[in-house]
Each structure stands twice: as C-alpha cells, then as structure tokens.
Amino acid sequence: MPSTSPVSHPDFIICDSMYGKTLFFDDCARAASLLPSGSRPVQYPLNSGSSDLLVRTHGDCTISVKDSGPIPAPSVSVVPDLLRQVAGWIIRRCVSSSWGVGGFATLGLERLASYSVLATTDYWDPFPEDINFLTVTIGGFGSQNIRPGNTDPGVPLALAEFQWSRMLDYHAKPNSDIAKMLETNMAIWVSQAERMNQGGSVPWWEVPSQASEMTYECNEGLGSPSIADCTQIESSQLGAPSDTVALHPGATTFLHLNTCYFAISATTALIVNWDQIRAALLTLINVCVRNPLQPSKGGRAHWGAPPKQLSGLRKRQGNQGGVTGKLELETIYLISPVTHFDIGWNALPPHANITVFQQSEQWKGAIAELQSCTWKAVTNGVSVSKC
Image (tube, rainbow, N blue to C red; front, side, top):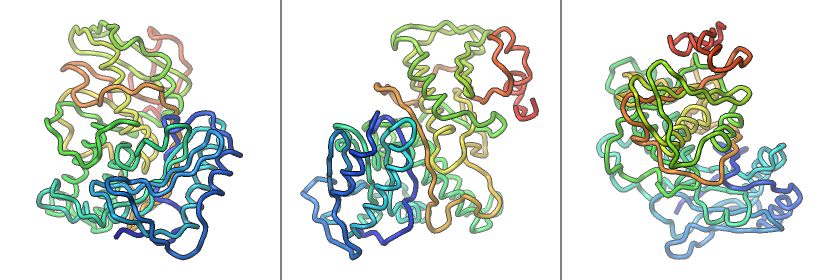
C-alpha cells in the first residue's frame, strides 16, 4: 500500500489557469481548513477504480487529493497535516499570486523516479503499485475531475530531469553503459511529455502507437522567455484553428509579447493551419519554457531527428538545484487558454519550424527584427545574451 512520509515541501508545484482562474484566497484557505488534521499516518481506502482520496470545497475553490499512477491502489497512507502543508504551499504560490490561478503539487514522486532509473529492460512492463504518488490540486469548479498527476506533461519532464541528476550522481562517463541507459530513459520521458497537454487524456505511462518525426529541443542561448508572456501569446494571438498561414522561404512570421517571441518559418513554401501551429507551440512551451525542474529556456520545434545530446535537459555542476534522492521544489506559473488542442507529435509538416526566444532588444517590427542582433543570433545558434 503506497504511503507518504512527512516532508518539508512537495516535489514540485505548477500554477496553471487550466486548473482554476480568479480564485480567492479566503475561499481556498477555508477549503484547506476543511482537510483532516493529525500528525500520525492515516489509512484512506479508495473506492474500486477511483483515485479520489479527499475533496473539499468552499465557495469557488476546490481542493482534491488523488492517488496517481497506472494501477489504482486499494488504499493510501498519509499524514493529514502533510496534505494541509502542501495545500498551503499551492495557495501561497498560485492563488495568492497576482493571477489567482489554481495549480497542483506532487508528493512521493521520487519512488517512480527511482524505479524509472532501474527499469532497463522493457520500459513499458506493468508498473508496480508502490510507485504511485499523491497529487494535490487546487482549482475552480470541475477541477476535481482533472488528474494532473497522470496527464500533465510536467510529470514526465520531472522524471527526465531525475535521470540527468542520477547521471551526475554516478559520474557517468560519456558513451558508458550507464550513460546510454540514462540518456535513453531521458529521451523516453521527454518524448512522453511531447504527447501530453494540460487537461488532456494521454497519461505518462501510455505506450506510443507511433513514432514522432518532430523534435523539440531547448537551448539556453535563446534566453529565458517569461512563461506568462509565452502562454498569453498562445491564447490571444493565434488565428482560428482552421484558418491557414502561408509560409515562404526567407519570410518569418513573428508573434511577441514583452519578453517572449515566437518565430514561425519554413525552408520551402507551405500552407499550415493555426491548429498545427498551436499544437506545436504548446508542446514547445511545455518542454522548454514550462519544464518544472529547470529554468525557462528558449527552444525550437522542427521536423527531424533530435541531436545526439538532449539539449532539453539542463547540464549542471554538482547537485545545485538538481534532483538527488528527492525532487526539489520549484514553482512554475502558467496562464493557459481555455481550449487545448491536439498533442505536438507530428504537428508540423517537414520544412516548417517554430523558435521561441527572449528578445534582448526593443521590438522594432518584423522588417527591422530580421536585421537585429537577436534574430541573427537565433538563426546562427549564438547566445542572445551577447546582444
């Protein structure tokens, strides 16, 4: 039976308007006060086929605690005061922010992360029950029906980051067996994240039915665009899903808001629709800008095989900000649109690509931008920090 031990904070927190908008602190604080209290572990039985542990509502704010994982557990043991602490973390970091958005946090993800390091034969063998973890979600009406611990791309990205931290822990040499194994595991989890979106239905353990021909690669040289700015572009500046966009070689379509810039281009004449662009753009945001355990980075989405090294994962010295036996707390703020579209696998046709980057110069329009230091740096793979 899965259980959680008291910890000082959750694995990570993601604040996302998908889980709630314009929430009031008083409502959420009152809902948190309705959670059970106690400093000793309590065994909570789960109904057959259900992952719901607890649900508490006050006003427009709902707090739900769920068992997350591919195999529903018959019961879960947890210290009630720990759930109150985690709810408090989410309220302070999400609801109390200027956006008043909802969010979720995970507890006990290190068990799954450790198992994913050891699963070297068939990654898609049935997962054991004891790798389940808890997810605490705070949101508005209907948020109790969403299961971010199963379907939010932040979870597989956190697992990918754990693989990288273990490579540092093991001092794995390039091309060694352990390095190859961990790189393979990282690629699996990043690829899984590319198939998922907030509020979607694809769980992190689902076996892919097809291979993706697209690559989503992150690059520190493209700066650190704001998550809020990038997602606001996605929700406000894209056309209707069925409307089309003509792309031509040498011509770039720019979308921008404050620190975040998207450049949409192609190496040959193409017609794409906004739905394709939106799916690829959302996935690029998830993998590079929103990754729960690494700083925001710029990145590119394009058709073709990824580079040998996964640039989407942060290289670090030692364990600063990293993940050793336990995932360290990070908070990600995100404002999402109401509607979510298809996943990013194979979203763009060959020869089309999208780049997201942080602009270092004042916006002067697309014509001037093509001559700017930043755009030249982006197209030549040079760090925009030099501009």
